[in-house]
View 1 (cartoon, rainbow over the protein chains, first blue to last red):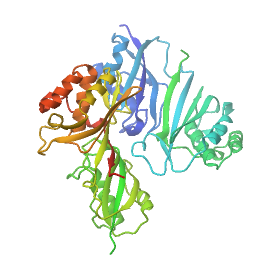
View 2 (view 1 turned 90 degrees about the vertical axis):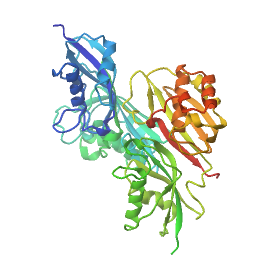
View 3 (view 1 turned 45 degrees about the vertical axis):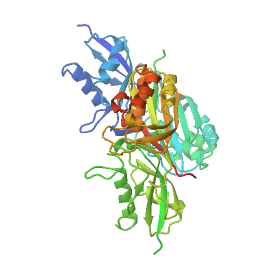
View 4 (view 1 turned 60 degrees about the vertical axis):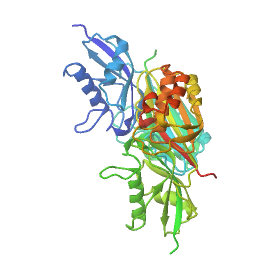
Length: 249
Length: 249
Protein backbone atom coordinates (compact mmCIF):
# COMPACT_ATOMS: atom_id res chain seq x y z
CA UNK A 1 0.00 0.00 0.00
CA UNK A 2 1.25 3.42 -0.93
CA UNK A 3 1.65 5.54 2.19
CA UNK A 4 1.81 9.30 1.86
CA UNK A 5 3.15 11.79 4.36
CA UNK A 6 0.94 14.86 4.57
CA UNK A 7 2.23 18.15 5.98
CA UNK A 8 -0.47 20.54 7.17
CA UNK A 9 -0.34 24.12 8.37
CA UNK A 10 -3.00 24.59 11.00
CA UNK A 11 -4.40 27.41 13.08
CA UNK A 12 -6.19 27.16 16.41
CA UNK A 13 -7.78 29.38 19.00
CA UNK A 14 -6.21 28.07 22.21
CA UNK A 15 -8.88 29.58 24.49
CA UNK A 16 -10.78 26.36 25.10
CA UNK A 17 -7.97 23.84 24.85
CA UNK A 18 -5.87 22.36 27.63
CA UNK A 19 -2.92 22.77 25.26
CA UNK A 20 -1.72 20.92 22.20
CA UNK A 21 -0.70 17.56 23.58
CA UNK A 22 -3.09 14.71 24.43
CA UNK A 23 -3.88 14.46 28.15
CA UNK A 24 -6.43 12.20 29.78
CA UNK A 25 -9.84 13.83 30.33
CA UNK A 26 -8.83 17.10 28.73
CA UNK A 27 -9.75 18.67 25.41
CA UNK A 28 -6.55 19.08 23.40
CA UNK A 29 -5.67 20.05 19.82
CA UNK A 30 -3.81 16.81 19.11
CA UNK A 31 -6.74 14.73 20.34
CA UNK A 32 -9.18 16.62 18.08
CA UNK A 33 -6.86 16.17 15.09
CA UNK A 34 -6.46 12.45 15.76
CA UNK A 35 -10.22 12.03 16.28
CA UNK A 36 -10.93 13.75 12.94
CA UNK A 37 -8.34 11.57 11.16
CA UNK A 38 -9.67 8.40 12.78
CA UNK A 39 -13.19 9.29 11.57
CA UNK A 40 -11.87 9.79 8.03
CA UNK A 41 -9.90 6.52 8.20
CA UNK A 42 -12.84 4.41 9.41
CA UNK A 43 -11.65 4.23 12.98
CA UNK A 44 -8.01 3.48 12.24
CA UNK A 45 -5.62 5.37 14.47
CA UNK A 46 -3.52 7.97 12.63
CA UNK A 47 -0.81 9.59 14.77
CA UNK A 48 -0.13 13.27 14.33
CA UNK A 49 3.28 14.87 14.95
CA UNK A 50 3.55 18.63 15.48
CA UNK A 51 6.50 21.04 15.29
CA UNK A 52 6.19 21.27 19.07
CA UNK A 53 3.63 21.53 21.85
CA UNK A 54 1.80 24.66 22.87
CA UNK A 55 0.52 25.20 26.41
CA UNK A 56 -3.06 25.67 27.53
CA UNK A 57 -4.47 28.97 26.23
CA UNK A 58 -1.70 29.49 23.66
CA UNK A 59 -2.87 30.11 20.08
CA UNK A 60 -1.44 29.11 16.72
CA UNK A 61 -1.61 30.90 13.39
CA UNK A 62 0.81 28.59 11.62
CA UNK A 63 1.48 25.41 13.59
CA UNK A 64 2.76 22.59 11.37
CA UNK A 65 1.89 18.91 11.73
CA UNK A 66 2.45 15.78 9.71
CA UNK A 67 0.80 12.39 9.51
CA UNK A 68 0.96 9.31 7.30
CA UNK A 69 -2.04 8.04 5.39
CA UNK A 70 -2.87 5.34 2.85
CA UNK A 71 -5.43 7.68 1.22
CA UNK A 72 -4.62 9.19 -2.15
CA UNK A 73 -6.69 12.35 -1.85
CA UNK A 74 -5.22 15.21 -3.94
CA UNK A 75 -3.28 17.42 -1.52
CA UNK A 76 -5.48 20.49 -2.09
CA UNK A 77 -8.51 18.53 -0.89
CA UNK A 78 -7.15 17.71 2.56
CA UNK A 79 -7.99 21.06 4.22
CA UNK A 80 -11.72 20.88 3.43
CA UNK A 81 -11.87 17.14 4.21
CA UNK A 82 -10.28 17.62 7.64
CA UNK A 83 -12.06 20.88 8.44
CA UNK A 84 -15.43 19.19 7.96
CA UNK A 85 -14.46 16.83 10.82
CA UNK A 86 -12.79 19.37 13.11
CA UNK A 87 -14.35 21.68 15.69
CA UNK A 88 -14.63 25.35 14.71
CA UNK A 89 -11.67 26.43 16.84
CA UNK A 90 -9.15 24.45 14.74
CA UNK A 91 -8.66 24.93 11.00
CA UNK A 92 -6.35 23.32 8.49
CA UNK A 93 -5.11 26.17 6.29
CA UNK A 94 -2.90 24.32 3.83
CA UNK A 95 -1.83 20.77 3.11
CA UNK A 96 0.84 19.31 0.90
CA UNK A 97 2.41 15.95 0.26
CA UNK A 98 5.85 15.81 1.84
CA UNK A 99 8.67 13.36 1.39
CA UNK A 100 8.88 10.56 3.92
CA UNK A 101 12.00 12.23 5.33
CA UNK A 102 10.05 15.35 6.31
CA UNK A 103 9.36 15.56 10.06
CA UNK A 104 7.31 18.42 11.54
CA UNK A 105 9.57 18.62 14.60
CA UNK A 106 13.02 17.50 13.49
CA UNK A 107 12.97 19.23 10.10
CA UNK A 108 12.11 22.63 11.62
CA UNK A 109 14.92 25.18 11.33
CA UNK A 110 13.26 27.86 13.42
CA UNK A 111 10.02 29.36 14.65
CA UNK A 112 8.38 32.70 15.04
CA UNK A 113 6.16 33.54 17.98
CA UNK A 114 4.14 36.70 18.50
CA UNK A 115 2.98 38.08 21.81
CA UNK A 116 0.06 40.54 21.96
CA UNK A 117 -0.28 43.07 24.77
CA UNK A 118 -3.10 45.58 24.97
CA UNK A 119 -3.04 48.67 27.09
CA UNK A 120 -6.30 50.17 28.28
CA UNK A 121 -7.70 51.26 31.62
CA UNK A 122 -10.44 48.59 31.43
CA UNK A 123 -10.26 45.11 30.00
CA UNK A 124 -11.83 44.34 26.64
CA UNK A 125 -14.43 41.54 26.50
CA UNK A 126 -13.12 40.67 23.02
CA UNK A 127 -9.47 40.32 24.00
CA UNK A 128 -9.43 38.57 27.36
CA UNK A 129 -8.33 35.25 25.90
CA UNK A 130 -6.44 36.75 22.92
CA UNK A 131 -4.00 39.27 24.40
CA UNK A 132 -2.34 40.15 27.70
CA UNK A 133 -4.05 43.12 29.37
CA UNK A 134 -1.84 45.88 30.81
CA UNK A 135 -3.77 48.64 32.63
CA UNK A 136 -0.67 50.86 32.61
CA UNK A 137 1.23 52.67 29.85
CA UNK A 138 4.18 50.88 28.29
CA UNK A 139 7.11 52.58 26.60
CA UNK A 140 7.58 50.65 23.36
CA UNK A 141 10.98 52.24 22.66
CA UNK A 142 12.34 51.07 26.02
CA UNK A 143 10.97 47.59 25.29
CA UNK A 144 12.65 47.55 21.88
CA UNK A 145 15.94 48.68 23.38
CA UNK A 146 15.75 45.99 26.08
CA UNK A 147 14.84 43.40 23.44
CA UNK A 148 17.89 44.32 21.40
CA UNK A 149 20.07 43.09 24.29
CA UNK A 150 18.59 39.59 23.93
CA UNK A 151 19.23 39.23 20.19
CA UNK A 152 21.83 36.75 19.01
CA UNK A 153 23.23 33.60 20.58
CA UNK A 154 23.18 33.39 24.38
CA UNK A 155 22.69 31.03 27.29
CA UNK A 156 19.02 31.73 28.07
CA UNK A 157 18.96 30.08 31.53
CA UNK A 158 17.38 33.25 32.99
CA UNK A 159 14.64 33.10 30.37
CA UNK A 160 13.33 29.59 30.81
CA UNK A 161 11.27 27.84 33.42
CA UNK A 162 13.48 26.86 36.38
CA UNK A 163 12.05 23.35 35.97
CA UNK A 164 13.57 22.95 32.48
CA UNK A 165 15.59 19.77 32.36
CA UNK A 166 17.30 20.29 29.01
CA UNK A 167 21.07 20.72 29.55
CA UNK A 168 22.05 23.06 26.77
CA UNK A 169 20.32 26.40 27.23
CA UNK A 170 22.11 28.21 24.43
CA UNK A 171 19.68 29.47 21.80
CA UNK A 172 19.79 32.04 19.00
CA UNK A 173 17.24 34.82 18.61
CA UNK A 174 17.22 36.09 15.03
CA UNK A 175 14.42 38.66 15.44
CA UNK A 176 12.92 40.58 18.33
CA UNK A 177 10.67 43.39 17.19
CA UNK A 178 8.37 45.54 19.30
CA UNK A 179 5.53 46.90 17.18
CA UNK A 180 3.06 49.46 18.48
CA UNK A 181 -0.34 49.56 16.75
CA UNK A 182 -2.96 51.78 18.35
CA UNK A 183 -3.62 50.38 21.83
CA UNK A 184 -1.67 47.17 21.20
CA UNK A 185 1.97 46.25 21.42
CA UNK A 186 3.05 43.15 19.56
CA UNK A 187 6.32 41.33 20.12
CA UNK A 188 7.67 39.32 17.20
CA UNK A 189 10.28 36.85 18.29
CA UNK A 190 12.00 34.42 15.94
CA UNK A 191 14.82 32.03 16.60
CA UNK A 192 16.33 28.66 15.90
CA UNK A 193 14.78 27.12 18.99
CA UNK A 194 13.06 28.05 22.22
CA UNK A 195 13.26 26.83 25.79
CA UNK A 196 10.18 26.14 27.90
CA UNK A 197 8.27 29.41 28.59
CA UNK A 198 11.07 31.38 26.93
CA UNK A 199 8.85 33.72 24.87
CA UNK A 200 6.51 34.34 27.80
CA UNK A 201 9.43 35.19 30.10
CA UNK A 202 10.89 37.50 27.45
CA UNK A 203 7.44 39.14 27.20
CA UNK A 204 7.14 39.48 30.98
CA UNK A 205 10.63 41.01 31.15
CA UNK A 206 9.98 43.46 28.31
CA UNK A 207 6.75 44.51 30.06
CA UNK A 208 8.89 45.38 33.12
CA UNK A 209 11.16 47.37 30.80
CA UNK A 210 8.13 49.10 29.27
CA UNK A 211 6.90 50.14 32.72
CA UNK A 212 10.33 51.49 33.60
CA UNK A 213 10.91 48.94 36.34
CA UNK A 214 13.88 47.38 34.53
CA UNK A 215 16.29 49.33 32.35
CA UNK A 216 17.68 47.80 29.14
CA UNK A 217 20.90 47.35 31.13
CA UNK A 218 19.01 45.41 33.83
CA UNK A 219 17.65 43.10 31.15
CA UNK A 220 21.15 42.52 29.84
CA UNK A 221 22.35 41.78 33.38
CA UNK A 222 19.45 39.35 33.85
CA UNK A 223 20.58 37.48 30.73
CA UNK A 224 24.22 37.40 31.83
CA UNK A 225 23.33 36.29 35.37
CA UNK A 226 21.93 32.93 34.18
CA UNK A 227 19.38 32.87 36.96
CA UNK A 228 15.62 32.68 36.36
CA UNK A 229 14.97 34.96 39.34
CA UNK A 230 16.67 37.91 37.60
CA UNK A 231 14.21 38.08 34.69
CA UNK A 232 10.58 39.25 34.76
CA UNK A 233 7.50 37.17 35.43
CA UNK A 234 6.16 34.64 32.93
CA UNK A 235 3.58 36.63 30.97
CA UNK A 236 0.16 34.94 30.63
CA UNK A 237 -0.49 32.28 27.97
CA UNK A 238 -3.37 34.14 26.30
CA UNK A 239 -1.07 36.68 24.59
CA UNK A 240 1.07 34.03 22.88
CA UNK A 241 0.75 32.88 19.25
CA UNK A 242 2.90 30.30 17.48
CA UNK A 243 3.10 32.30 14.27
CA UNK A 244 5.08 30.18 11.82
CA UNK A 245 7.54 27.34 11.56
CA UNK A 246 10.48 27.65 9.21
CA UNK A 247 11.56 24.63 7.15
CA UNK A 248 13.91 26.58 4.91
CA UNK A 249 11.67 26.88 1.87
CA UNK B 1 -32.30 58.88 50.37
CA UNK B 2 -30.63 60.41 47.37
CA UNK B 3 -31.10 58.18 44.33
CA UNK B 4 -28.80 58.57 41.37
CA UNK B 5 -29.35 57.39 37.82
CA UNK B 6 -26.19 55.94 36.31
CA UNK B 7 -25.74 55.63 32.55
CA UNK B 8 -23.11 53.10 31.48
CA UNK B 9 -21.61 52.27 28.10
CA UNK B 10 -20.83 48.57 28.04
CA UNK B 11 -19.23 46.09 25.68
CA UNK B 12 -19.76 42.36 25.53
CA UNK B 13 -18.62 39.37 23.57
CA UNK B 14 -21.94 37.69 22.71
CA UNK B 15 -20.36 34.29 21.93
CA UNK B 16 -21.33 32.62 25.20
CA UNK B 17 -24.56 34.47 25.99
CA UNK B 18 -28.11 33.43 25.17
CA UNK B 19 -28.67 37.11 24.30
CA UNK B 20 -29.12 40.26 26.33
CA UNK B 21 -32.44 39.71 28.06
CA UNK B 22 -32.97 37.56 31.16
CA UNK B 23 -34.36 34.10 30.40
CA UNK B 24 -34.79 31.24 32.83
CA UNK B 25 -31.86 28.80 32.94
CA UNK B 26 -29.81 30.74 30.41
CA UNK B 27 -26.73 32.87 30.77
CA UNK B 28 -27.62 36.40 29.65
CA UNK B 29 -25.94 39.82 29.76
CA UNK B 30 -28.75 41.46 31.75
CA UNK B 31 -28.64 38.71 34.36
CA UNK B 32 -24.87 39.10 34.80
CA UNK B 33 -25.24 42.88 35.15
CA UNK B 34 -28.03 42.52 37.71
CA UNK B 35 -26.08 39.88 39.63
CA UNK B 36 -23.04 42.17 39.78
CA UNK B 37 -25.16 45.10 40.97
CA UNK B 38 -26.96 42.98 43.57
CA UNK B 39 -23.56 41.88 44.94
CA UNK B 40 -22.47 45.52 45.20
CA UNK B 41 -25.78 46.51 46.82
CA UNK B 42 -25.67 43.77 49.48
CA UNK B 43 -28.25 41.60 47.79
CA UNK B 44 -30.71 44.33 46.94
CA UNK B 45 -32.19 43.96 43.46
CA UNK B 46 -31.16 46.72 41.04
CA UNK B 47 -32.97 46.62 37.70
CA UNK B 48 -31.02 47.44 34.57
CA UNK B 49 -32.57 48.96 31.43
CA UNK B 50 -30.77 48.76 28.09
CA UNK B 51 -31.17 50.69 24.84
CA UNK B 52 -32.61 47.47 23.43
CA UNK B 53 -32.07 43.72 23.42
CA UNK B 54 -29.50 41.85 21.41
CA UNK B 55 -30.00 38.24 20.31
CA UNK B 56 -27.92 35.21 21.22
CA UNK B 57 -24.43 35.49 19.71
CA UNK B 58 -24.72 39.21 18.90
CA UNK B 59 -21.90 41.40 20.26
CA UNK B 60 -21.86 44.95 21.60
CA UNK B 61 -19.11 47.56 21.44
CA UNK B 62 -21.23 50.40 22.81
CA UNK B 63 -24.48 49.15 24.32
CA UNK B 64 -25.96 51.67 26.78
CA UNK B 65 -27.76 50.80 30.01
CA UNK B 66 -29.05 52.72 33.00
CA UNK B 67 -29.89 51.84 36.59
CA UNK B 68 -30.79 53.69 39.78
CA UNK B 69 -28.69 53.45 42.92
CA UNK B 70 -28.57 54.97 46.40
CA UNK B 71 -24.75 54.79 46.31
CA UNK B 72 -22.80 57.99 45.92
CA UNK B 73 -19.71 56.56 44.27
CA UNK B 74 -17.96 59.17 42.04
CA UNK B 75 -19.06 58.38 38.48
CA UNK B 76 -15.54 57.61 37.26
CA UNK B 77 -15.29 54.81 39.82
CA UNK B 78 -18.29 52.82 38.60
CA UNK B 79 -16.51 51.05 35.69
CA UNK B 80 -13.81 49.49 37.90
CA UNK B 81 -16.31 48.71 40.68
CA UNK B 82 -18.66 46.88 38.31
CA UNK B 83 -15.92 45.24 36.24
CA UNK B 84 -14.52 43.60 39.36
CA UNK B 85 -17.89 41.84 39.76
CA UNK B 86 -18.54 41.02 36.10
CA UNK B 87 -17.37 38.03 34.04
CA UNK B 88 -14.53 38.70 31.59
CA UNK B 89 -16.83 38.76 28.56
CA UNK B 90 -18.66 41.92 29.71
CA UNK B 91 -16.94 45.23 30.43
CA UNK B 92 -18.23 48.60 31.55
CA UNK B 93 -16.30 51.14 29.47
CA UNK B 94 -17.69 54.43 30.80
CA UNK B 95 -20.19 55.58 33.41
CA UNK B 96 -21.76 58.93 34.12
CA UNK B 97 -24.49 60.31 36.32
CA UNK B 98 -27.55 61.08 34.22
CA UNK B 99 -30.64 63.07 35.01
CA UNK B 100 -33.65 61.10 36.24
CA UNK B 101 -35.34 61.83 32.92
CA UNK B 102 -32.67 59.94 30.99
CA UNK B 103 -33.85 56.55 29.78
CA UNK B 104 -31.51 54.17 27.93
CA UNK B 105 -34.29 53.02 25.58
CA UNK B 106 -36.68 55.96 25.24
CA UNK B 107 -34.03 58.69 25.09
CA UNK B 108 -32.18 56.99 22.23
CA UNK B 109 -32.34 58.92 18.94
CA UNK B 110 -30.64 56.31 16.84
CA UNK B 111 -28.21 53.42 16.72
CA UNK B 112 -25.34 52.17 14.66
CA UNK B 113 -24.76 48.50 13.97
CA UNK B 114 -21.83 46.93 12.21
CA UNK B 115 -21.78 43.59 10.44
CA UNK B 116 -18.50 41.76 9.82
CA UNK B 117 -18.08 39.35 6.93
CA UNK B 118 -14.85 37.53 6.16
CA UNK B 119 -14.04 35.90 2.89
CA UNK B 120 -11.60 33.03 2.79
CA UNK B 121 -11.61 29.54 1.37
CA UNK B 122 -11.33 28.05 4.89
CA UNK B 123 -12.85 29.26 8.12
CA UNK B 124 -10.68 31.01 10.70
CA UNK B 125 -10.62 29.54 14.22
CA UNK B 126 -10.33 33.10 15.55
CA UNK B 127 -13.38 34.48 13.76
CA UNK B 128 -16.01 31.77 13.93
CA UNK B 129 -18.04 33.57 16.61
CA UNK B 130 -16.96 37.10 15.58
CA UNK B 131 -17.75 37.39 11.88
CA UNK B 132 -19.84 35.72 9.19
CA UNK B 133 -17.77 33.40 7.00
CA UNK B 134 -18.23 33.57 3.23
CA UNK B 135 -16.19 31.01 1.28
CA UNK B 136 -16.89 32.88 -1.97
CA UNK B 137 -15.73 36.26 -3.34
CA UNK B 138 -18.00 39.24 -2.73
CA UNK B 139 -18.08 42.37 -4.88
CA UNK B 140 -18.02 45.24 -2.38
CA UNK B 141 -18.98 47.83 -5.01
CA UNK B 142 -22.13 45.91 -5.93
CA UNK B 143 -22.97 45.63 -2.21
CA UNK B 144 -22.48 49.38 -1.74
CA UNK B 145 -24.67 50.14 -4.76
CA UNK B 146 -27.41 47.81 -3.50
CA UNK B 147 -27.13 49.36 -0.04
CA UNK B 148 -27.61 52.84 -1.47
CA UNK B 149 -31.11 51.78 -2.57
CA UNK B 150 -32.05 51.14 1.07
CA UNK B 151 -30.93 54.52 2.42
CA UNK B 152 -33.54 57.00 3.63
CA UNK B 153 -37.08 56.50 4.90
CA UNK B 154 -38.97 53.40 3.73
CA UNK B 155 -41.40 50.74 4.79
CA UNK B 156 -38.96 47.94 5.70
CA UNK B 157 -41.53 45.09 5.79
CA UNK B 158 -39.29 43.04 3.47
CA UNK B 159 -36.35 43.53 5.85
CA UNK B 160 -37.80 42.34 9.12
CA UNK B 161 -38.72 38.99 10.56
CA UNK B 162 -42.14 37.90 9.24
CA UNK B 163 -43.11 37.35 12.88
CA UNK B 164 -42.69 41.05 13.73
CA UNK B 165 -45.88 42.31 15.35
CA UNK B 166 -45.11 46.03 15.36
CA UNK B 167 -47.56 47.83 13.03
CA UNK B 168 -45.48 50.68 11.69
CA UNK B 169 -42.59 49.33 9.68
CA UNK B 170 -41.37 52.68 8.38
CA UNK B 171 -37.81 53.38 9.47
CA UNK B 172 -35.04 55.72 8.36
CA UNK B 173 -31.53 54.56 7.47
CA UNK B 174 -29.08 57.45 7.76
CA UNK B 175 -25.93 55.50 6.87
CA UNK B 176 -25.16 52.30 5.00
CA UNK B 177 -21.47 51.93 4.21
CA UNK B 178 -19.68 48.89 2.82
CA UNK B 179 -16.03 48.95 3.84
CA UNK B 180 -13.49 46.46 2.48
CA UNK B 181 -10.42 45.85 4.63
CA UNK B 182 -8.12 43.04 3.52
CA UNK B 183 -10.18 39.83 3.70
CA UNK B 184 -13.05 41.44 5.59
CA UNK B 185 -16.09 43.41 4.51
CA UNK B 186 -17.76 45.51 7.17
CA UNK B 187 -21.24 46.96 6.88
CA UNK B 188 -21.94 50.10 8.91
CA UNK B 189 -25.64 50.73 9.25
CA UNK B 190 -27.11 53.60 11.24
CA UNK B 191 -30.68 54.71 11.60
CA UNK B 192 -33.35 56.12 13.84
CA UNK B 193 -34.69 52.70 14.69
CA UNK B 194 -34.51 49.09 13.60
CA UNK B 195 -37.06 46.31 13.20
CA UNK B 196 -36.46 42.78 14.44
CA UNK B 197 -33.59 41.13 12.47
CA UNK B 198 -33.44 44.17 10.15
CA UNK B 199 -29.64 44.53 10.07
CA UNK B 200 -29.12 40.79 9.64
CA UNK B 201 -31.60 40.68 6.73
CA UNK B 202 -29.93 43.72 5.15
CA UNK B 203 -26.58 41.90 5.55
CA UNK B 204 -27.98 38.68 4.06
CA UNK B 205 -29.41 40.63 1.11
CA UNK B 206 -26.19 42.55 0.47
CA UNK B 207 -24.29 39.25 0.53
CA UNK B 208 -26.58 38.06 -2.29
CA UNK B 209 -25.81 41.32 -4.13
CA UNK B 210 -22.07 40.77 -3.52
CA UNK B 211 -22.28 37.27 -5.03
CA UNK B 212 -24.12 38.63 -8.05
CA UNK B 213 -27.29 36.70 -7.27
CA UNK B 214 -29.32 39.91 -6.78
CA UNK B 215 -28.71 43.13 -8.70
CA UNK B 216 -29.01 46.51 -6.96
CA UNK B 217 -32.32 46.81 -8.85
CA UNK B 218 -33.51 43.49 -7.39
CA UNK B 219 -32.73 44.81 -3.91
CA UNK B 220 -34.76 47.94 -4.63
CA UNK B 221 -37.64 45.78 -5.89
CA UNK B 222 -37.42 43.65 -2.73
CA UNK B 223 -37.80 46.81 -0.64
CA UNK B 224 -40.74 48.08 -2.70
CA UNK B 225 -42.49 44.68 -2.65
CA UNK B 226 -43.02 44.77 1.15
CA UNK B 227 -42.67 41.02 1.40
CA UNK B 228 -40.08 39.28 3.53
CA UNK B 229 -39.66 36.51 0.94
CA UNK B 230 -38.22 38.97 -1.60
CA UNK B 231 -35.15 39.86 0.47
CA UNK B 232 -32.13 37.68 1.24
CA UNK B 233 -31.66 35.28 4.13
CA UNK B 234 -31.14 36.47 7.69
CA UNK B 235 -27.34 36.55 8.03
CA UNK B 236 -25.97 34.78 11.13
CA UNK B 237 -25.87 36.49 14.52
CA UNK B 238 -22.12 36.15 15.01
CA UNK B 239 -21.29 38.93 12.51
CA UNK B 240 -23.46 41.54 14.24
CA UNK B 241 -22.23 44.26 16.61
CA UNK B 242 -24.33 46.92 18.32
CA UNK B 243 -21.76 49.65 17.78
CA UNK B 244 -23.18 52.77 19.42
CA UNK B 245 -26.36 54.40 20.64
CA UNK B 246 -26.99 58.06 19.84
CA UNK B 247 -28.53 60.30 22.50
CA UNK B 248 -27.84 63.53 20.63
CA UNK B 249 -24.82 64.66 22.58
